[in-house]
Structure formats: structure tokens, C-alpha cells
Image (cartoon, rainbow, N blue to C red; front, side):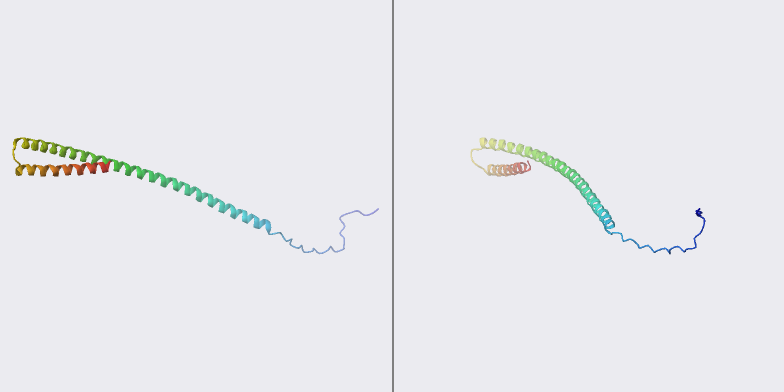
Length: 143
């Protein structure tokens, strides 16, 4: 029978451990991973800036619309005020012109010859008529 006892220590020395060679790993997976991470960062930054740009454009448009509306309402109010002022001045001048026309017609009926008073009335009437025409032109320009 053979001795099959495994407790027996053999006196034969074991082979010394052979140093392992470091296996060379390929750098490609590492480089590809970094390229993907960098590309994701660049894409994220680009999308973020696009979103900020759109939000800023919307805010600027809203602000511009508000300012235009304020300016338009102010302009309309001033225009209405000017129109009412011109209308009252125009009515006042029209009343003066009408009264001068009546006075002039009365003087013509009562005077047989032309006098200096008639000339003065004509001069005043023409001046008032010029002012009235000028106010009408200004009112038409404002409309």
C-alpha cells in the first residue's frame, strides 16, 4: 500500500514564485470615457446657454412691450390734451371772428364812405383769420 498521507511534507523545494508581468491595458477605453464626459459637459453647457438666451430674449421682449405701451398711452394723453386745447382756442377764435364779421357788416351798413375804422377792422379780421387758419393746420397735423 502506498502511503497516501498528505501530511507528509516533501523535502523538495517549491519553485520560487515567478514575478508576474504587468499586463498592458489599452488606453482606448479610458480615453473614450474622458471624451464622452467632455462632450457631455460641452453639450450641457451649450443647451444651458441656449435656454438662458431664450429666457433673456423673452424678458427683454416683455419689458420692451411694456415700455412701448406706456409711451403710447402717454403720447395719446398728451395728444388728447393738445387737441382739446386747440379745439377750445379754435372755438374762441371762431367766436372772435364771427363777432368781428358782425361788427364789420354793421359798420359797412352804417357807413357810406370808407374810413380808417373800416381798415382797422379789416386788418384785425385778417389777423384773426390767419391765426384761426394756423390753429386749424396745427390741429390737422396732430391728428
